Amino acid sequence: MPRPPRLVETRPTGHGRARGLVSSRQSGRRVGSRTYAPSADLAPFVAAYWTGQWDLTGQPPHVTELIGDPCIHLVVEEGGPHAGARVVGVWTRLWRRTLEGRGRVFGVKLRAGGIRAFTRSSASHYQNHIIPLEEALGGAAQLEREVLSQHDDARAFEAFETWMRERRLPGTDERIGLAAALVDHIARSPELLTVEQLATESGLGIRELQRLFRDYVGASPKWTLRRFRLQEVALRIERGEAPNLARLAADLGYVDQAHLARDFKAAVGKSPSAFAAGVEG
Image 1: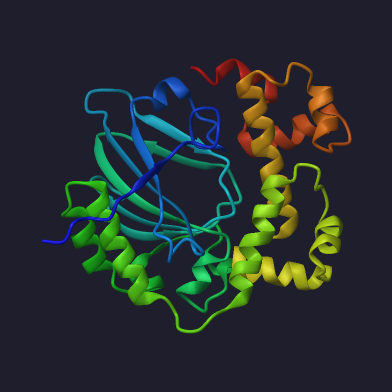
Image 2 (image 1 turned 120 degrees about the vertical axis):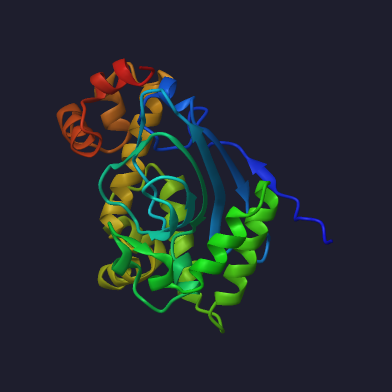
């Protein structure tokens, strides 16, 4: 029997947990999670593999809250009302999911643009939608059976990788790599504040940039810039690196502290001060 692939476990990019998580750290410790790097041939399209498992029988549920990245996820879940295989589009609002009882989930976080390696449908088709995998890409029953029959992560993601290789579209679409590179550039460049700046640095016109993000990312460049900025606000508050909101607002290009506070509350549902007070609760 062939050996399973060697999965390389990756570390969280946030403050000891996934970047963008804004739910209770204390409650979240009851949920086991791991992330892994993809195989080299799929890395241009896949950002990471992730797993979650929980047994909250007889305990209060856990509510996951996430300021998500501009990425689409392929998910296979076992147990509860969400069991099955699905595509989760870019979520432009706060992602909120209640975990209760027992469950297990395996996910593929696609890179920005990565969905177009498997379908010619615009990425915007999935925005704020959860679509059955069978409807979106096909082969869901076999994938679900093969992933959930495994007892270790390596075998489960080996099945996922086989499925993705079988469904990868022929040919090379250079816009997939361009979309991924632009989103990576935004994530690495907190000084990048406007779509006009991004257009200048990329050499693309604003309308061309907007079309690329609509069809390959699934959200606008303006939203993407704002999303990474909000993630940075949450991360600095959680790390205790934002004792002065006025200074943080200036560092991240907000007009003033009030603008930052309004933006953050609209996205997270609580003020920066309330988030700082409650993140460990």
